[in-house]
Image (cartoon, rainbow, N blue to C red):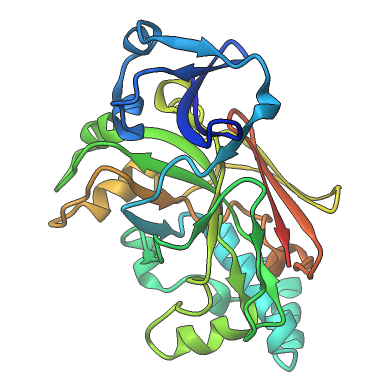
Length: 307
């Protein structure tokens, strides 16, 4: 089952909607919250008073929920290495011959490109700005302090139940659904912020985007490690990849986040960039006037415009 929030252009009202067999239906019970809806079983939702959307043009899909907190993991070693190599190519060209020669001779990544030790000990993440989220069709302004705006295609995970010191089973119970996440990044300020010992700050916190559609847990929970994904810019496919290859599972990562820390319903987690699905890896960054679409199998797409 898929879930969304619709804005009725005629009545100026907002309503929750679910998709049954390719058909969107408005939930008529206005007492429900998005978190409550995601926690309901298929049978419970089926029994709700619903109305088929006959003319979808009267509605606009809007951001389905506002995260209560936002943690973005880095679960892919391949992305970490390839992105580090991209930073060397772009910002440290004097080191590029050394890296290239080493990798050609030994046929393995240059050691300094690999993540630091803690990456292999625990799932690592940063806390992002949960108040600056955009959604389907929204325009993203390029911050005045960057000339190199990047995108990162990630799988987003929403929890709808509280967690603390959670087991894997408890995490599975708390997951409400999955969505598409675009973690926009200002690459030309990122290295400086990271090397400061803090950060990322201005690199990330100006805005992120999530899909207007959330796919329910039951539909995807057993498939999240093998979903095909795609990055499209101005109608041209830039990258195709797959969600497989995480060093930790989504469940392990969220369980770690809950270690001696209370997590709350409505918190959003990012998987980290799916390998190849950022400009620092594939060489295609964003420019003013671009349109970027991210796709994840089983969820749909997320399109934003750059201004």
